[in-house]
Image (cartoon, rainbow, N blue to C red; front, side, top):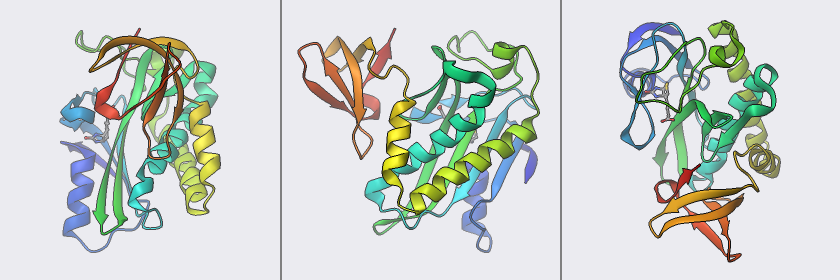
Length: 241
Ligand code: BTN
């Protein structure tokens, strides 16, 4: 369903899930104008009306134990990656944990909100924002990029949305069919700066190292120049250039 204007498609879908009769898995809410989009770390998500993809998908991954929630992050990121790869080619990567990057700039991101019941994930709202036809970004977002800025061409939002949903569904079904290693290996192979020497910042300060792998539960493993494997969760590490 497309909505003209909404604060956040994640909020909207969350309300639908809690207010109405059961919604079917795979329900997609897309906004033309999402005026108060939410990002990770309590940040906002800015998208010019009518030019970008801002949407949320309802999943019901009750087959997936809570301890495996990061596999859902992997599956959704890979679905977005595979949908955009035919357009954008090799500059495209997934920046751990779930940013979509082109070169060193951010093309899109996702906010996956799980509703847990016992040891199971009852509902998951996968909110996805991808910069498509926007021609410029505010000064406070110097790291953002859109498909149009890369290819100098406008793209059909509905077509790209259906491609993303098709690929997300395929990876989701792989998880459901227990093809976990396929999803994990593919995710690792798409990672931004995998096996490249780079600069990072943790609470101990700056250090150089190399992204080496991601643990099953989703921690980033960076090998420092003493050869030690250091594990980081989301807020514990920053990538420096
Ligand atoms: C990030 O910070 O990288 C995550 C951005 C997620 C934005 C999407 S846009 C559709 C959905 N609705 C929201 O409010 N946020 C997500």
